[in-house]
Length: 261
Length: 243
Image 1 (spheres, each protein chain N blue to C red):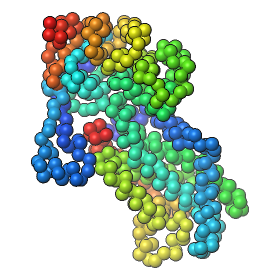
Image 2: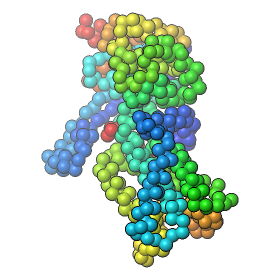
Image 3: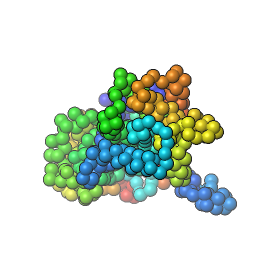
Image 4: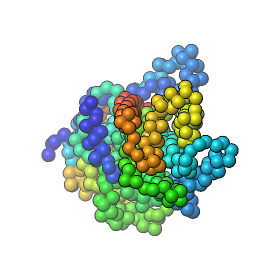
């Protein structure tokens, strides 16, 4: 467990690097696009509009305040999807750096997930806009959204570290993961209510950590209520398991990165 | 003054060429059938030992592929040795190959901050030394141009300027000067001398024996991964050139 203290020390020394890498990611993401950062706000709004149109005419679910229900789930899911996907390539795409200078390698997946978190936080403005439009009251529970976001961040960091380490050894994982995320999306109640699916699918959904975070998030934003203890417990458990596994696997695999990139 | 800062003890480095080049299942199975998977082992370094004291300037000389860069990468902590132990007692500014630590899509300005951060220096520190870097690298007019449009000489200028501004304990310079023009090489050599006076330790790789003898008082000759000679730079250079 000595590597934990080493990581902590390195995290402190390399904090400037983490913030530079985050800045770089943001710059590269919106380079040459005319609207730039505005896209982080526009994108979820436009997506929500289209999906609301589709699901209020073609498939109909009995959900109150569908636009807000949708944008909550969609924002959190797309953060997870995007951050783990770019974290997956973080080691391989930073090969020139890793080959020539010593940098603690966990910085790469972590900084990618964090930079994605920064862009996602712009989309919360979109959620607030939808709340105002749908006349949803902002309750005292609203500031608590920080908790599901924190759980999601830890969960995504763990998965991101595992993927980035595996991608060094098996490039195939990148293809596999895109299929997996599609399945994962359909098994996350983003645009349908969990009550609408058959019993056995429900059981799978209950094992899906993203479902718990989204459920908790919607509780604070949409319903203005306190989630039950069980939901808290599951969320704490799944996010910490993911993080611990991520750290252990990454630490084990990182020694030979240099020989494979 | 004779405090050891780099200790290299019985270091060997093995590369398994076959295993590392196997990317697809097809290749893997083919190699498995042919029994080639564990064969092409390559020892880039064989049982190397030496010590460098603080303030010393040591050159590594030898032919291409003799293990110089591998040794530097081991010392810089980029790779870990297969056998043996390396102890380093200070901050390293590695200038291994061109453009180490640069993101080619970013401008020179952005790369200064990125590269500084790679060595553990924050935005404020780099801000304070920004002028100095511009001055030394003579890249003022190109600082907002993406680095991918730089010539190799310009990249070397920028890299050297950033690495030396941080006043590292150990400076590693690997062939970087070779691409700079004469004027800039002179400037770099002066800079290296002034760093050496301030107790920086230098590890230097070059194929130019004159430069080696001008900068370094000690040289290590590597050949085929083996340490041939560890002596003062003139003796080592002469031996290397077969005189």
